[in-house]
Image (cartoon, rainbow, N blue to C red):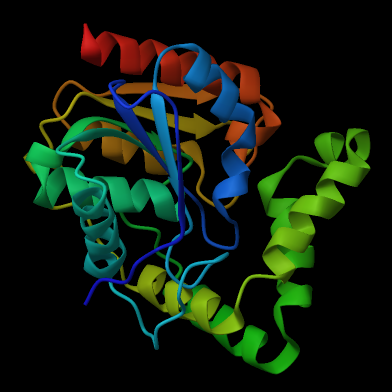
Length: 258
């Protein structure tokens, strides 16, 4: 059953809509670097907190990918948006894959960032669930920040790194663990050929959580997909290399609308 996720909708009512979908352990604020450029280029921007995150409800877990995808469809229905471009990172990208496979008429284009169609590492995700239950989210946040960014970026932006670490630390434990369970056995690879939306896949060259090989699998599985690897970017590449990610996103959205 879908939940009414917290969302923010900005931009002209008649502009094409771009949905921005967050990673596990973050909120809609992870897309702050992309917001103004998208608005300035004539898009209406819909950001939301995935269930179990930020200001969205935290229903009992475990969650399935159809749950988080269904929440997006319900949100589009509530806002009377027939179709939208969809940009997602990590879990957000997996949500986009599911939408492209199961609701193609609602997806104008896809940008799949630092993500995977089959994350693997089942035991790691289950171990992380146990770690959260034993130690809380603050400990998880310490590890997340070093996966999200290269050490060079953390050293150069210590205050911003602290803010983003706090974003994970403040994520509801039950929501985070339910999403870990979702990731533990997810496999969207077999249905990749069902995606018909124009698709751009972006990986970070320094992403140790989901290395570029994961992005290549998606790009190879989706007919006509474009694949880009951004240098000096770890898992939250849209933040670490915001200018390059934003440029690629805007190019793709404008091309899909042309």
